Length: 429
Image (cartoon, rainbow, N blue to C red; front, side):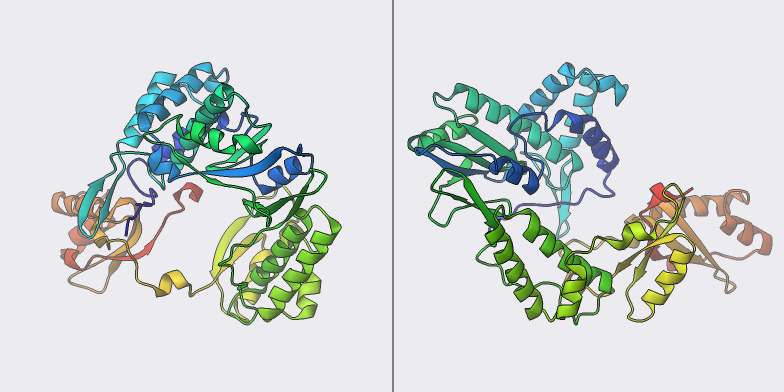
């Protein structure tokens, strides 16, 4: 079975650099007339369309976009856009050449570990790196502009969301334009095509059908594998999560279909699906038109508030949440048990000493005292600093050293352990 490595970059050496480059490059993306921000953007465009009798709608999809992007082309496109950007100095003091050097460094650091073996990604951008999405978009904008400007009878409409493309084109030109797209970068970027059928053509989560007058009829699209299962009402989750399911489905039923008949048909389908998931009629009617209650929690728009994430325990979390909200603490609720926590983890387990961003404890060997600390760096690095302080009697730099030297006790280094992870360092004062 061929596999694609999707590696989380969180905590990796180049993660913060990748996020910084993403902030610099992001304003360069989306300035093309072919860019789509979301499904609503497409629906707005589709509502104004009227196809000619000899036109059709087709969808193109890039094969394995991120791992297909050639890094040399990505660097070339990024450099050209940076040099033409008049507002670059408002986001960074780095020169375009310096930004490109850092970008190349990020591309070359796509290493990962699997089953105790280390691998280096030789081609494409890494799936999981923050900057990969931006770079892929820049390359796709370059390819589509070249394809459209050099085709004899270009599409009358060409819109793209990341790697999904939809266009209105002469029916007789579909195959030729498909081949022309694939000719732009034969060795790397290849497109598949989905042609219009009597059932319509899916794009994002909308199903698009051509009416007799050339206008587009839009409804909600569900894949054939869709089972109709949503968060069950009887599951051990907070009521606000279940209300969010109702609001989300009814909001989509109102925003996606572009005719009253399709809207009503979708509302009936949503009501049927929720009923099968044990949602009471009263609960559905209560929340199908309601907006989020988050704004009701805000007493003062500019007031500084705390933030807490609570595990959900029925009849207990609700009470704690009300108390915290009375003290201007915003509260989010998460389930205690998830499918992720129940299945085996495919990633290699890190040794405690290699973990970063942890809360740890180190016990004393001669008494019951336990030192508890936290570190953003690896535990191995922090423990070695404690050991050095104890060894050289640097009591002002380590509470462990102060305890050991004042009482003449030994530290039980071998029983050092991790208590928890601490990842929200940016919120620390």
